[in-house]
Image 1 (cartoon, helix red, strand yellow):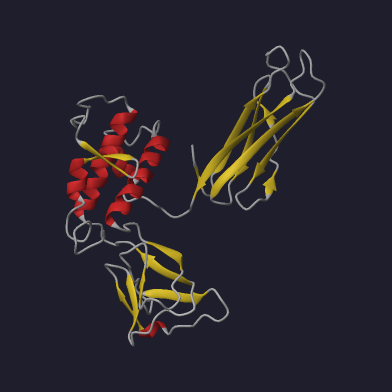
Image 2 (image 1 turned 180 degrees about the horizontal axis):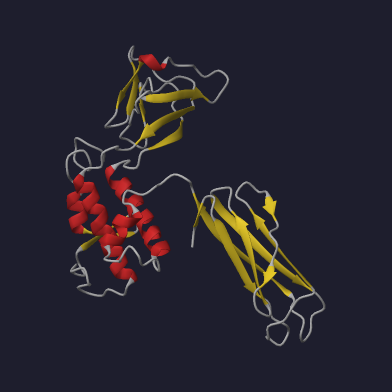
Length: 287
């Protein structure tokens, strides 16, 4: 189960002796390796005989590795061994199109029932990823991309259109930073941006010489179209029905062949049709 950034990860492990029975070790340690390579050593505490728990307050988003180590002289009544595990920490900013409350309503789970919250959030994040693959960026966020253009093209194509310009931001693109020392510094006031297609051009038609360049901008849709929201709900219901053991005509009423395989996901055809609306998958929008 992933944890939210700043939350407390509850880590646990049970120790056994050479006969397989629960046992206390001579000493026990737990080491957490953070995404940046630094380590932390929370204090393990015995819960019941042979079982230990440690609490770690998260400070970084990403994959964490946990290593438990129990030492002593191997034999009956002495717990000795090691175990490596991992857990993930979600970034502090929301990254899904549907809120958790909306997602729970979509799969007909009461808001007061938190039993499946972690799984629903996982499916909700997966739904967002595939919808943004098909329809372009939806969740508003700042991104930085590296582009390798070196003068052959007058157009720089951003990867996560549509481009969104927040109030108070002077230009659609936040920065275009050369990676190499001889790269050019472009005046952002002379860069035109097609926010729907995500194309950048210099007003004088100059190419992007001496790349690569790191481009920082804000992408996404501050107002999410209804067809995108509905497509998210259709995909989420379909994924959840598979989780709950749906077979053939599942509990949400989708026939078994009402799916199309794209990018490794089984997506209901009705969701694909919903995403064909203006500004999403149609020729005038994001392909």
